[in-house]
Image 1 (tube, one colour):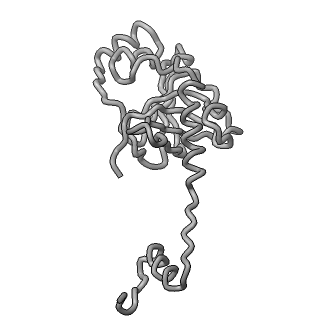
Image 2 (cartoon, one colour; image 1 turned 135 degrees about the vertical axis):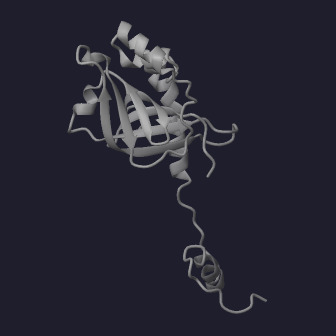
Image 3 (tube, rainbow, N blue to C red; image 1 turned 45 degrees about the vertical axis):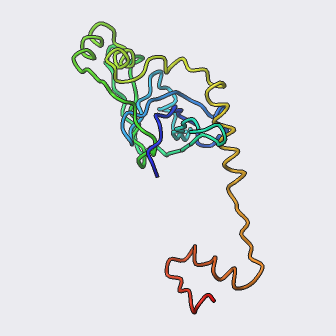
Length: 189
């Protein structure tokens, strides 16, 4: 499958299947298996809440739903300064690579260091150093995730395909699609 566009990234409660109401925090896909998330990070330390990452990109044409992935989190690292824990950012390692494209990165490490020395907010320093796009923290939840909710519902409605055959021969031929060792016996004419 082709790599998709840069996605919108939402940390979600895994027990809530609605993208809008399950939203916990915004993030950015920085590597195929890493999501960076700005603080506050209280939700990350809540052992009673299972979380996952939702990644979604717009449809390539107006006739289809956008592409949505939900991926479990393998582990998380919180990076920040001891003197300013509220300015920390989390880096979530996903259980497998996303099919989406990470942000096109133009990270300037020296600029990051300068910005972090002036202001202990890791996320603002990442924005200023070109590592993450600005404005992620302020995305409007319903406007961004409302369409994603609809894309997931559309995908679920088309999830099951009835493929009943009228004859035993039709079913016998179609069953080979599901068994790689299926032997098609005899001529078809």
